[in-house]
Amino acid sequence: MRLRNARDLLAGCLFLAFGFGFLILAQDYRLGSARRMGPGYFPVVLSLILIMIGLATVARGFLVAGPPVRDVAGKALALVTASIVLFGFLVQGAGLGLAVAALVLAAAAASRNSRLLPALLLSAALGGFCVLVFVRGLGLPFPALGSWLQG
Image (cartoon, rainbow, N blue to C red; front, side, top):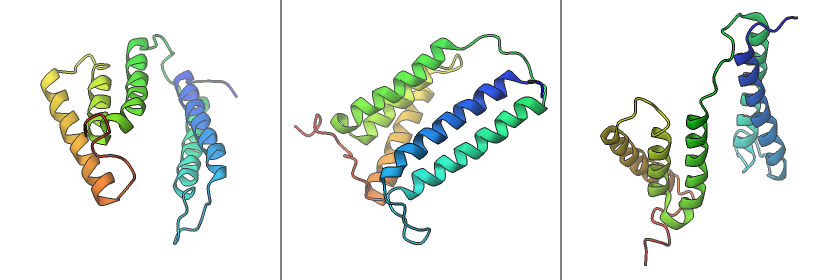
């Protein structure tokens, strides 16, 4: 077989790496069943889905011709990665809403087409939505307001 699409091959390998990585990390959690899901059920199912997507994408790299890999968007990659790290640092201290808002603002800066007002509106909407769904609705143990803001 001859490689016809390096982008798909690299993307598929990334999906496979994340899928196998999360599958290995989820082995310490109780799986449960589809009816009574344990804490490891969702990570395992999501990992298997990522692995299937990765295998399909790698196969596509050998079957479908695509453009060559030219430039890597280093600035965008760094900003999106930094936004995820920023979320991890902020979620306990500032709370879920502000951490999500900061993640969206930092990741929006990675786009050449990003404008400040729509990014601010989107960050506020997503921060509020995440608090309503995950903290209020699902009761997940994330602070809506972190310890930094409660005094």
